[in-house]
Length: 248
Image 1 (cartoon, rainbow, N blue to C red):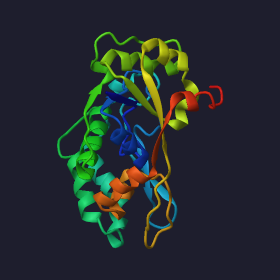
Image 2: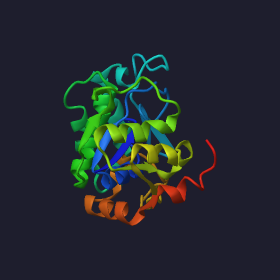
Image 3: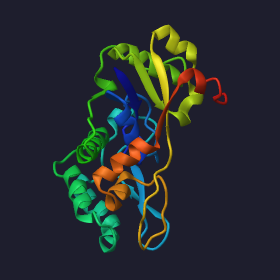
Image 4: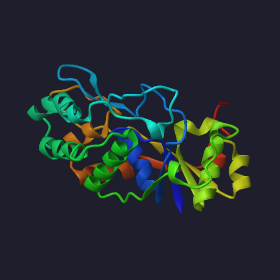
């Protein structure tokens, strides 16, 4: 079984779904200190005139004093309209506007107060739209997960071993935090996923790479997005990558 472990992000960029597609199981990493102003509570879409704009999930307690699993949404009842307002300009040009707005509405169809629950729901909805299997569990619901580890890179081999994964996959950008010896001791293989930013037409707007998957869905049909994921993804063995990564 191949495992990927990531923090729960809000409508993340397409590379996040490349990682989901490459893994057999997904572990929502929600047991560590919450990081304010991160991709967990916001992402980027096209601005109506130029550049990009944030779509945000306001929090009642978004500070480093809490664990990610404890982050609570502020004003869920008004959040849907706030997000939809930031997307209304896509109506003029984006061919899949209606489908994408329907997906966003589904994310807010049932009230939630927990940020992690909302972000998991967005992943489920996008994966269903793209036809990507999404089998997940939460780190906070595993038995015996420690409060901390010796260094940040030690989480992955420890959690992989705990759930019985033979291989762990991580985005290549985070390679510098890992030590090959940790994976060797755990008996877990490690691979790094390299994802080249997808490029697609955005008529009437200047293209900006690595925006929220919401933007990708506005301009592309699911078959085309799956093709992007396959075409732009490469998996590399850890012994090739970790040796080349700069020190953390």
